[in-house]
Image 1 (cartoon, rainbow, N blue to C red):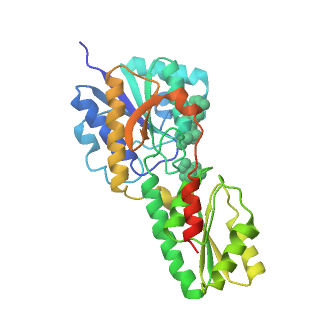
Image 2: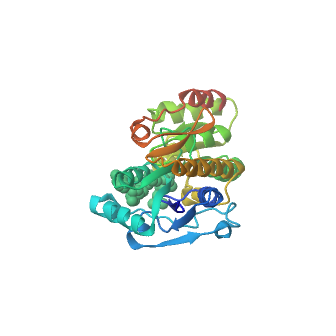
Amino acid sequence: MSQKSIAVLTSGGDAPGMNAAVRAVVRAGINRGMRVFGIYRGYNGLLNGDIQEMNLRSVSDIIGNGGTMLYTARSEEFKKKEAQERAADFCRSQGIEGVVVIGGDGSFRGARALTAAGINCIGVPGTIDNDIACSEYTVGFDTAMNTALEMVDRIRDTAQSHDRCSIVEVMGRRCGDIALQTGIATGATAILVPEIEYNIERDVIERIINTQKTGKKHFVIVVAEGVGGVRDLAKYIEQRLGIEARATVLGHVQRGGSPTVRDRVVASQMGYEAVSLLDKGIGNRVVVMRDGKITNLDINEALDMERVFDKKLYKIAMSVSI
Ligand code: ADP
Ligand code: F6P
């Protein structure tokens, strides 16, 4: 029987832990007797023939590194059917039977298209946003939250010293999970997320006034990227309440850095699971975490799911951050 060949790519925004997932795919594949190829710069690598065969040492010393050793890209070209067919032909020309795609749900749409073109693909959720409906967890989320936590703690030090209000925007695209978790962990007086309808007077101004009444003089407001407008909010708070306010957009600092234990472990589990599926000749699935366990789902089913925001946790945050 000929040796099976598989490949791995990272796509969309990079996330801490992607390297740990790549390492797991390469080593689990080689340990099963497969040849494993790294595809560079997302789907573009398949269109440009930018691949390299990996060995056990190709992924040495990367588990603790942020970013992705395979680089990443957003490929507009790959959204076209003709490009997907070309990518599948390229895989066949190299003997590649299956591809592990590490990325977000956009990347999973690409994986579904490549599977339809004849190459089995398995998605592994890798994004700091935790915005993939089918999985409780996405690789990169824990590191991003912990980075945001450290940054907001620092901002709190200076807000406290000046009796100021600091308004901090965290990433997450349309998802408020980083904001919610960071907000609760830093004792933010208000947290604004796109999933919960808000009213600035009721959910920010009144909350500040109520905490002022209990003697508090500095405030942190955490705002999700999907809500935005932190500079305008800072100006409004200054005018409305007469307290100094400063806005900070944390930005890409949240995407980098050495992955936490959780991200390294989950990435290793998910990468391993993806290889087990490809080894059985199974494609068009996404590796997910459900009830804390690593399992897998059909990509179509996974992409059709609607994300559920943790309203209970939001309620707890509002009740204890006063
Ligand atoms: P993420 O994977 O983080 O959600 P994007 O939405 O930017 O990031 O998607 C990453 C890449 O996946 C895109 O640049 C494109 O190459 C591919 N992709 C996204 N949507 C599709 C689609 N509908 N069909 C084929 N490929 C897609
Ligand atoms: O998906 C990860 C993410 O960092 C989002 O939180 C953010 O909206 C987006 O990517 C930023 O993308 P870019 O790196 O292209 O500016």
